[in-house]
Length: 65
Figure 1: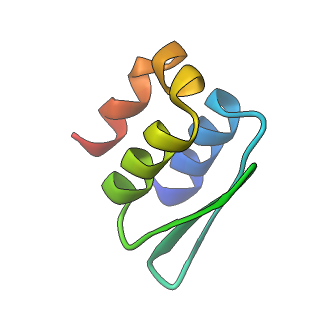
Figure 2: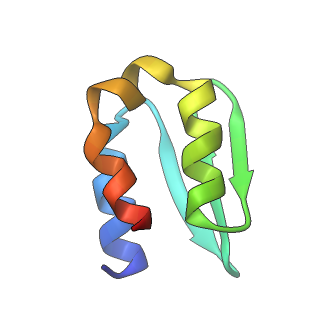
């Protein structure tokens, strides 16, 4: 899956958040700003920052397999 496709999936699963990827850094802007050097890091941070949305969309973990 391309980075643009991943960003689209994340935006659909987490409508309160805005996602970007620049120079290999993933960012999520929502109630707080999250930054990860890879997608797995960002998803873990997002799970802590928005546990309800993460639990409602368990399919997001497929993005890092």
